[in-house]
Image (cartoon, rainbow, N blue to C red; front, top):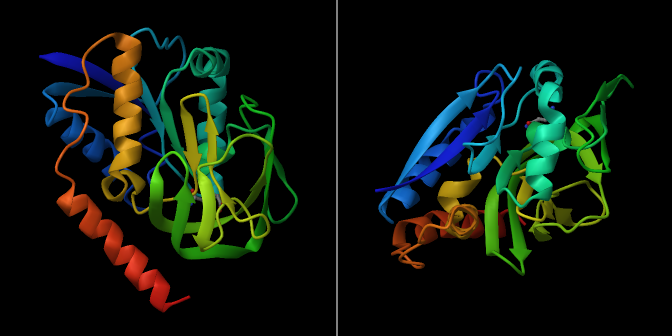
Length: 240
Ligand code: GLN
């Protein structure tokens, strides 16, 4: 059986609003393609390499947890940056997404240093951006989820798509997330992958390509995933 390995960073600190569901979704959809997905939880980063990693995942957390996790992860920021530049697929959620940038400014003005892997920063306010969110994406079609963040992120990289319901990166430009090479960052919790199989498959397919193993079949029966997505679209259209 072919195998892929996911490195789940800071799993003991960053797991808001069921972010762990993303790992379960990756496992399930890999299994349907006869691929065994191994999960390695990485909570101490000293000396860790990514030689055996095919996909990485970082969840979201409160400002406090985020600052502890960033300190730990900064020990391997060059390794992570090189892997991202080399096309390693990765998914980062909310707090995990924010600290890919240079800094996170809390509502009281405290600056928390980010990993500085990408050139953007996030400024947080006490008024939070919360609720169901729907995005139209050229790459992934309709994306749905739930957002709850104080951070406002502005950047000049590619995004996941255009927000039709909710906020996304900030309360101004109606764009959500980041898409840089095979790295995805998003404010969507909920978790995002079980309701958005296109994104799950994207991560798996990129990992298979990099490793040189088959990604077959390309299409699965998505009846349940599509039904979950429809619930959010219908609910959010009523609240518009
Ligand atoms: N602390 C960050 C914010 O409020 C991230 C929260 C989260 O991961 N949901 O913006």
